[in-house]
Length: 109
Image (cartoon, rainbow, N blue to C red; front, side, top):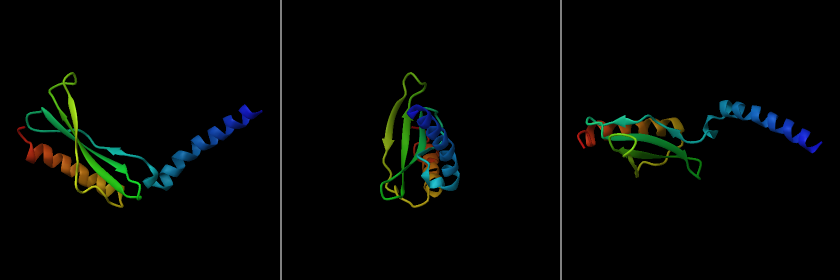
């Protein structure tokens, strides 16, 4: 009998979580942007946004170096602008920063 109850409770909560995601979009977890490669194609950057403990959102830029998946190395670039109340705004800023790193700062790196 206990298994029957647990199975139905699991199906109800499984159906409720997508509804909560629609009603409360800030509940969703981290966002990851697309890889943005520099002019040489050797260095790529990707924006990542994640929730912080204070209810705000932080950002980080992931740097990928290498020509193909066999030799990729990854490194986090710490960003000073790492807090904001709106997940979408912080994500837009992080994506813009990743694009600027690839196209302006380290264009031929």
